[in-house]
Length: 179
Image (cartoon, rainbow, N blue to C red; front, side):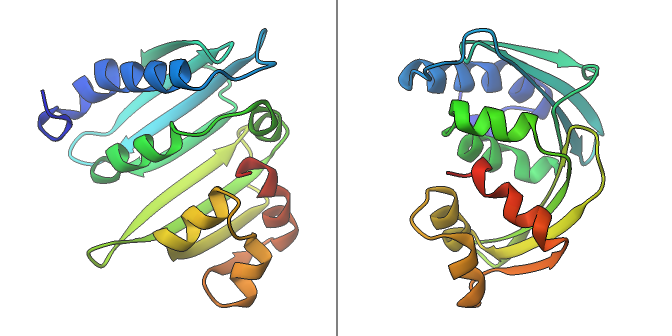
């Protein structure tokens, strides 16, 4: 069944775990034995849905409708934006990123400029802390270059490719999440 025809509940309960398991099988992540990554996904749209996603040892995934206790990371996103973002995010994970996420506290508000002239708003809350807070906005192509390490964030900021607002010290601490 094509991904676009799947209703959001089926996407989160069935397609998402299969996608993440496939990505984890394609890319073995060393040094992840004994780790547990809990994420809360708050989907806003026609239906407001909350799902907990737990990944253990970078191998096993559990999706829990209604959420989980004490997530390391909470993401608030619109229903329309969930599919492209999940596909993007599920393609990278490492021990360095796991350690960075578990040690981060604060909120990042992203405004990602997408092809077709629309903006994808994403809010990420790390370890339940709404502060410090920073906003980052820019075109998806430039943000992808930062995430993949092709361009560093300070250079992109100095060149005017991305815009930052809020606690810049917190923003600098987020660099380890993306490379």
